[in-house]
Amino acid sequence: MNAATFYDIVVIYVSWNTRDELAASLEALAAAEGLEVVVVDNASSDRTVAMLRERFPDVRVIANPDNLGFAAAFNQGWRASERPFVLQMNPDTILPPEELEAMRRCLGEDASLAAIAPLLVDEDGADTDNARPFPPLTLRSEGDSLPPHGESLQLEECRPGSILVHWFMGACGLFRREALVGTGGFDEGFFLYGEDIDWCLRAWRSGWRLVQARGISAVHLGNRSAAQVPSWTSVMRRHDGYFRYLAQAHGPWAARGNYLWWLARAGIATLVLAPASLVRPSLRPRLWHEWGRVRYCLTHLGWPFLCCSFGRNDAPRRETKG
Image 1 (cartoon, helix red, strand yellow):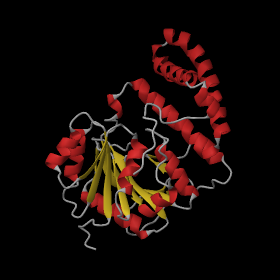
Image 2: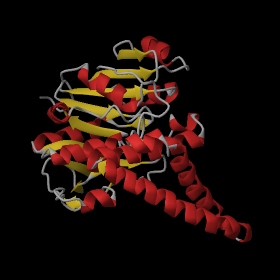
Image 3: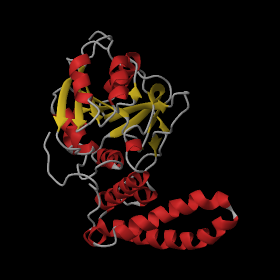
Image 4: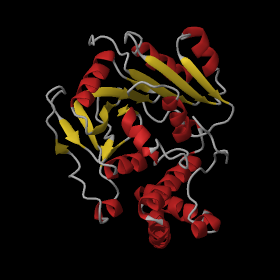
C-alpha cells in the first residue's frame, strides 16, 4: 500500500458543541487520502451537523437526538465501519497525516498490540502526560501481572521512544479493530471519564499490549467540551467514572471499600483544613478538593453505594446500539 493512502483506517470523532475545533481537526487530516471519517454528534446545539454537511460532505455523520456520552457514541462510530484500524480523535486534537502514517506502521508491525497512542502535547509543545499507570488497587491485584508502566519497546517501524503503557487517555489513539471486537468496545455504563482506563485494563487482561510512541505527537487543546458544563458536574463525572472502574475491575466490595475510605479520609481532611485555610489561604484549593470528595460521597451514599451502581450520571438512561 502506498504510504500516502489510508484506505485501511476509519477516523471516529465524538462531538458535543465543538464545531470550530472539529473543523480545524478535520482540515489537518484533509491531505490524508483514503481516510473514512465518521462523526458521531451527541445532540450539539452549535450547528455542528450543519457545518459538517456544508463543509465536509464526504464525512459520515451520525446525529444522536440525545447526548449518549462518549463511550456509547464511540462504539456507534467504529461499529459503523469495517476497516481494520480505528483512529479515535477528540475534536480538539490535531494530528498531521505523517504522524498518523507513523502510528499505522508502528501498530502494523506487532500483531500483539491492541492500540497505540501518540504523545499529546499542548499548543506550546509541552507534554501533557497522557499515558499513566493503573490505579494502585489494580497494580496490587492478583492475576494482573502487568509489565512496568513505561517499559521500553523496540519497534523498527516506529520512531524512537516507544514504551509499553498501562493505559492512555482517550483523546487520540489508533486501535486495532480485532481488539475492539474482542473486548466488546468501550463500556457504555461510563458517560465521560474512566472508560479509557477500563478498556485498557480489559485489553491487557485479554492478552493484548498497549504502546505509546513518544516520537509521534499530536496537539491536544484539551477540555473543550467539559468546559461547557459546571465544574461540579465534571467533578461528579470523574469520581463516578473512577468508582465504576473499581467496581468493574475489582468487584463491588472493592468499590464500596474505597468509597468509605474516601468518605472518612476526605471528611477528616476537610475538618482539619477548614480552620487552617483561614490562616493559610494557600490551603484553600486542597480544602475544596477534599470537600468535593465529601460532597460526592454524601450525594451517592444511598442507592448508588448500596447497589454499587456507579456511572452514567447526567446521561439518558437508555440502551443504544452502534
